[in-house]
Image 1: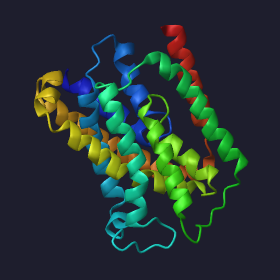
Image 2: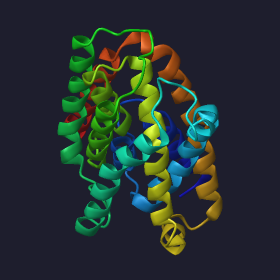
Image 3: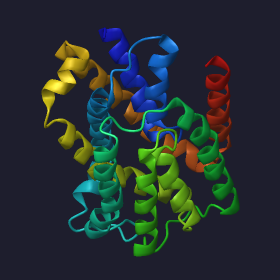
Image 4: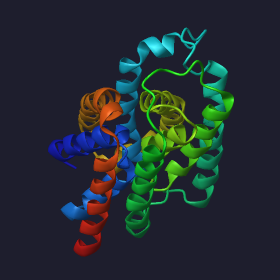
Length: 257
C-alpha cells in the first residue's frame, strides 16, 4: 500500500466513522472499487486509532468530567461502562465465529439502505427538543449500548444505529450524537487493544510502518471535521440526506458489481 492510498483510507475512515453512513462499509467497498487487495480488519482497526484520538481531543472536557460527571444531562461513568458491555460481548463472540470479521458486500447492500431509512424514520417521528434533558436515564443509555452491538455488521453504522436508538428513546439529536460519540471511546479502545496484541499481523498487511501513521493521521484530521459537522450542523438538518446517500451508494455498488 502506498502512502497516498493510506491517506485516502484514513480520510474515508475519519469522515464515515462519525457520519451515519458506515465506515466499515466504505472501508470494505473502497478496495473493491479500486480493484486492489483489501488490507484487512487489522489495518482498519489501526485507522480507528486516528478517529479515537479525534474523539478524545474533541470531547476532552466531557471525558475529564466523567469522574465525577459534571453535567446533569450526561451519562455517568458507570452508565458508560455498563452500556459498553453488550458491544464488547458481541465483539468477542463474533471474533471466535468470524476471526476476520463480517466483510460481505452482499450484506452491505441490504444494511446500508435499511438502517439509513430506520434512522430517518425514527428521527421524523420524534420532534427534536433543542433543550437538553434533565438527565440521561439508565434505560436510554442501555438501549443505545445494546444498539451499538449491531454495528459489528458492515453497513449498519455505529454512529447511525446509536443515534437512532437515542432518538427512539426520546433523546434529542445533539444529546444522541454526543452519547454516541462518548460510547465509541471504550469500544474503539478495546478493539485497538485486541488487535495490537499481534502487531506483526498489522505490519504484514501494509509493509511500511509509515503507511499506518499516515492513515491514522488522516483519520484523526477528518474525524475531527466529521464530529464538528455532526454536532453543529446535523442537529439542525436531520438525516434525510444520509438515507438518500446510503441508498444511492447501495444501488451504485449493486449495478457496478
